[in-house]
Length: 94
Image (cartoon, rainbow, N blue to C red; front, side):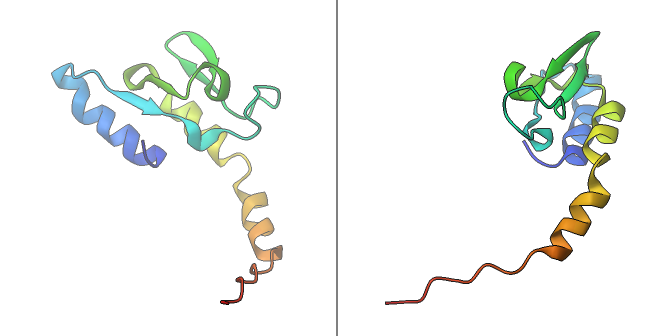
């Protein structure tokens, strides 16, 4: 579990030693039902949805390039949305 670049780096460390490694792909989930397709990722030769088929997958089978592209697909919109949000007021202490 962790950021996508970290999980990918761990895979490259464990691969030569044959250490079973799993990745939690919850970082790319959006609606949790598979309807939106935002969490679609290739695992081996199969297309999976992280929210309904996972979130844990054999990290050595994850198509990390595709995953990175999918994760970055809405980054511009996310940056704009953060700029439009107002800080949430903290509850007053009693």
